[in-house]
Length: 256
Image (cartoon, rainbow, N blue to C red; front, side, top):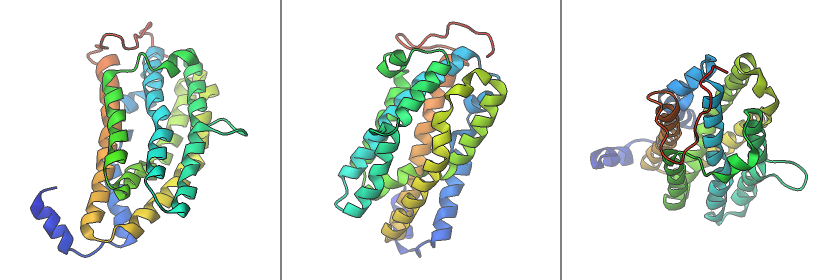
């Protein structure tokens, strides 16, 4: 943000809760990865089994870092009430003694796609650009103010609609994946709950218009990170189809 814009924002009135939520949703309309060509091909049933395997394997790296991201955020707060609320996210993905978490459920999706769970979990064949993008997400929550770190999670405001669409299209076009959709089933309830807490938090703690604008920018940056991961997949496995050395190789080009 240019310095003049920051100064103007500092002098501007605070957005109301509804205005802030509308601004965040506008970011989703413009930048969320539901519009990425890779996802559009997925929802049209035009990806091969190998391309879906590449997606599941690379996306696992992102999934595996989510509880680490949330643990970083949790560790940065001195508010016990915040920590109690936020640690739910770590359990949702890591699981506990009573239930499997999102990471284990994603490995189940990988197996449904035809990949060995240990192969996916190793991370050895992840695209370098995927690793870079995900690691940058960790860098954001580690180095920026806690308010912005929390705001970066607000892609959950839009994720439920994408998850619902993805499940419908996967069952329609890739029925062999149907047995691996437990991750998405769980997120249908988890994501809205998490988003409701996070948006209340950022509204209450963004005390100036400048801080509100930084909240909005943090969400833009998170959307860019998600988009960049799909850019890497598209380049490596769709067009031009150039996976780098050491990355996952598609064995079959037949449509799924």
